[in-house]
Length: 319
Figure 1 (cartoon, one colour):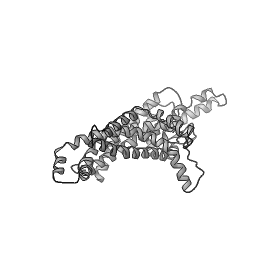
Figure 2: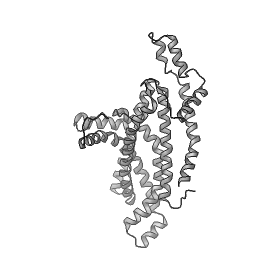
Figure 3: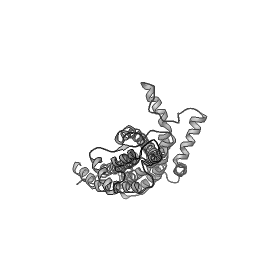
Figure 4: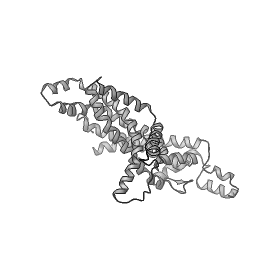
């Protein structure tokens, strides 16, 4: 297992290098300048502007700037935020736990809904439950996250006043009251992301279970007199989860993309909102670091999916 993980990480290095090079070139060629506002500021002398541009290498060739950034990144120096006046790695470390909590909780919620609903609907195809579940899945998948987020805010925050619509990290409560307040403010953003993903996963789980339940080994297991619940859990669901794991791993870029929108709606201080703020301020070091972190997270989740394959299917060996 250790050799397999090491080999996959080595294979992922060229992909990450290629992604970082493409991102850096695109950002370098994009219009705008991190120090563009200095040119219109009469209080900053021209020689100071030139010194700052020379210090950060703004006018150097793109490949030289990229190699400088790559070497600094490998040494743990992720750059300096021009707008926040703080090191980029400190900014990301402050915000990434919040994003991982929201995204992770939404994925747990999505799977907790999609697995039982999809399996039950597949075991009773074209029943009333199946038709209702399919209709709700289509509706949930059709509604964008920004619409459902605003809808939940209007219902549960503006009209009913049950839940806060602004995500705060500086909760003044202590003890169990702090956990309750933190849970309340996470309900709506987690629900928005989780229900959207659950709608997609439910249809995929139903389709995968329908494909597996018709196979000969399931009929053989039933003919041996095994309990129906054991047949479903051990023989049907376990094999049907293999393509579902693939879907979840491939959906991670879309999940993080949806998290960016959700963080903006609920004012969540995560790396998604940090990315939007950096784009508006033309803060190139932050944009580069955040997008690279997103790429690394996608690679890690795909590696976890490959590891889960071996647990679900004993025929897969890590050699």
